[in-house]
Image (cartoon, rainbow, N blue to C red):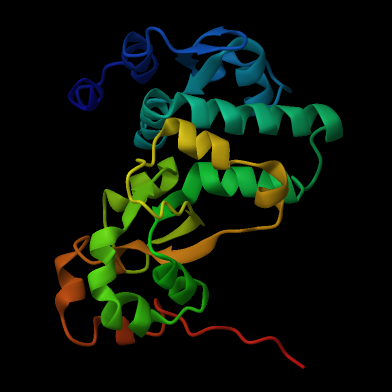
Length: 231
């Protein structure tokens, strides 16, 4: 599919051809040209009403389509929550806390299934503990990139790339981070409370050879120290 897009084929048609059997409340999932949505109708509202995803011929929208194909329940959940908020509050100058969180996860989110010690180190921005002293614990962790904008950025990796991470602990390490699990984790009250932790993803052991080098995590521009509240 990616090869056909690189040759100039239509992204919407290629994605639609790979989506048989995926059904949304409004009908079968389809990808359509970006100008299919009527002027004035919000993007998420149009998808919810028609089960059609406006798609441009670029990498960003193509990756968004691939996420729809791989995680249709989670994407449907995000879309339904966005559409409900739009129906409730309309489109204004700001999205509000829930729509901000939904958009952030959709574009730049990831899910971390890891031992509690790693999550606590991440929340504390204790990078040395997270990536050095507890490095072995990453063998028990799973990080799944969900956001299509983050996937696009990873096509040209750079050290500062940061995901907004939700924690999905599985003490038995037996349940995969799958579509249903991500959809179930997308609860409005939890998301509106901004539960994400920023994670420089190329610091994750095994994700980039450069992070094996001594001093890699000493870069305070990327691995920023915690911000303590002022008194």
